[in-house]
Length: 254
Image 1: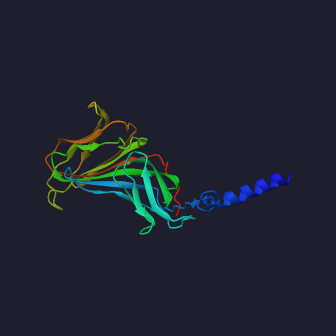
Image 2 (image 1 turned 90 degrees about the horizontal axis):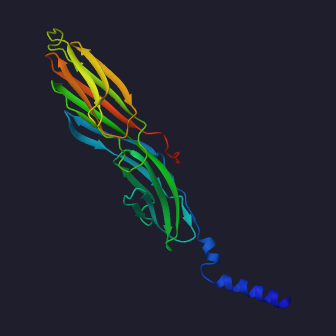
Image 3 (image 1 turned 60 degrees about the horizontal axis):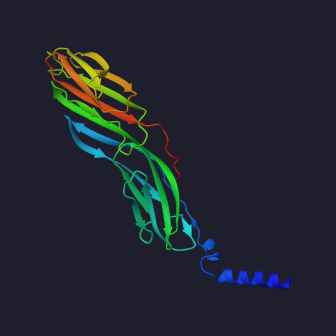
């Protein structure tokens, strides 16, 4: 019996001297990632049919409250869609800023890595919608507006395309008039060239007409066209197109 006890004591003493046994327990990473937002909207702005600006979504991941028994050397955010990870050296920064240029539902992996290349990570779901802001002034021939609801990251599709289109027929001469009514037709076409949605409108001089609609087919590219059917006055067009996703994003962790 004494021999067995002696062997056990010797084993305990030896194991305490072997690097990586008990020291591994003291070196575990406690990962804390704070983020105030997990969603946003990319905004594309068009004037007279030309893209003039794009506002991307920027999200920040703060690792400053993470701890480890060993030296932390890197914080990062990885994308499951194959995009290059965004990383920072822990000696110079504790926050990682990630930019999203395309709509979609993203699964990102936020991680901390120590000097022994040991990692601790957590998955965060991000929702990025798209808004297209469209403006045309004084036209007889409105440009076609292309709508691409297909997510480039191969993830879930938007729930719908939302359309808010306003056509204005400004007074020819302010407070005097002299213009005529304008007849128009809104049409939303699918990839096969079929009109999915159609709406006719008459815009009196000095007035405007609005069309609000939504379409559930988000699996192919569409085109929104406004045809100038009858009239002589130039028209102004203001349109807002939204691609909205189901709210699948993770809750913020501020």
